[in-house]
Length: 297
Image 1: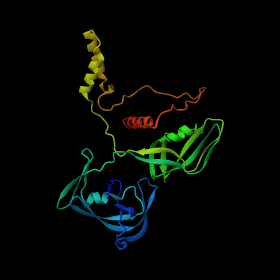
Image 2 (image 1 turned 180 degrees about the vertical axis):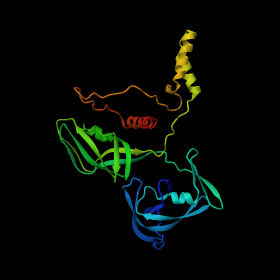
Image 3 (image 1 turned 90 degrees about the horizontal axis):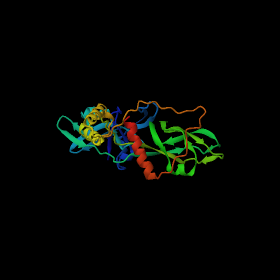
Image 4 (image 1 turned 90 degrees about the vertical axis):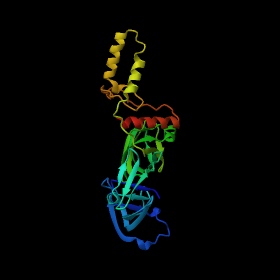
């Protein structure tokens, strides 16, 4: 069974799916209640408590957990477990240390290599009149989040409509999306249609705050190699070294653009156009690049 350790949870939880069918119900202390999640709105129904006995490597651990119907993982170990066994989570080396009064063990993280994707579906049938913008409710398999999204590739190819949102604020598994229909005819979207996909990355990026001076010097040398005059070459190299942070290195960095940008809205056509055709693989690569750029600034 896979276990998720959550430093944002005060208590530990286990779902019905994680229990073996042969597990006796007499071990569950029934007491119906509700717990509020970190978003302050979403709640979970608690059916009772039970004593969990978990073997990690060669160490036996135990904790009193809340018994619920559904979780994002089979079992969530919260701060009660973390404090009891003095957990030390090392994100750099991707290991966690667990100790009691007798021994200390070290375990490696089980990291998903891919991202977790959630479809965004229409809650109702929608008709978008010509030359109109409408806002429609959608459902997502997330209780609460603020995420970026990308439109469904098939939907883009089938209908000439534009999605005006660039992010979704999800509360209670629902959100809203604005559509614009630039055509002279109505567009129909059926209930349950997948409009887009939101992606929750399972691995976090590490911000690069250290300059790779060796790589920068190599880049500057290559840039100034064509200058024949030694004095001019030295002056250019000195100037480039003053702005070393702006030069690309082997690690991901992004230059800061101080020029302000504006979208003209008066006496100008709308700054929108139908996107160029791109294959699903091209969209996938572009999406990954955008996520990295957004993360690093």
